[in-house]
Image 1 (cartoon, protein in one colour):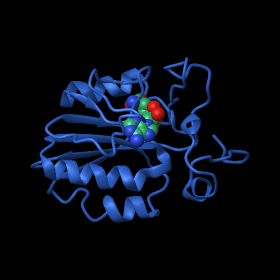
Image 2: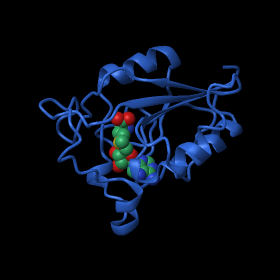
Image 3: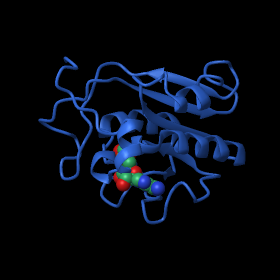
Image 4: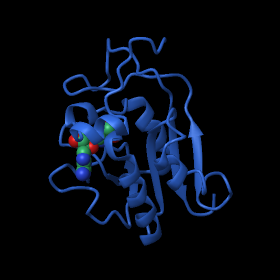
Length: 169
Ligand SMILES: C[S@@+](CC[C@H](N)C(=O)[O-])C[C@H]1O[C@@H](n2cnc3c(N)ncnc32)[C@H](O)[C@@H]1O
């Protein structure tokens, strides 16, 4: 897919100007992808969700605010709002320290020069301590409200990466 004509809507520059947009943030993980990670890690909490798109029975939404709730001792799935990636990664580090045995975050793989990656992932990843990254094959469609599998939408022009916090990896 060409990047020509693509208008990003949740890069830090736009969010800084107009604030976060829930319409833009609600990009739903396709079931096949979530299930492949759930089979490996057995999640018990979806930290960023709403009633319609929650992947786990226990979840936090905008109102309960996953950024201010304790996540530990849950096994956490988190496809965070892209409008505040640094905030969600800082929270994941804190909750891993507080006792979450595993946290998996689904993130864009095309912004690794930005502060959220450089501050919260690059110094820790793949050093045999507690964080591993898995770059995912191909670009896939995210779901949208009312269209959970994203059928007939074109995939966004970036790949994704799963960032895994787990002791002993
Ligand atoms: C990228 S979507 C992920 C949806 C779904 N849980 C999944 O994994 O596919 C992010 C979701 O987080 C929600 N959200 C935004 N701010 C939040 C907050 N402070 N606490 C919890 N959820 C939040 C949005 O409403 C949106 O539904």
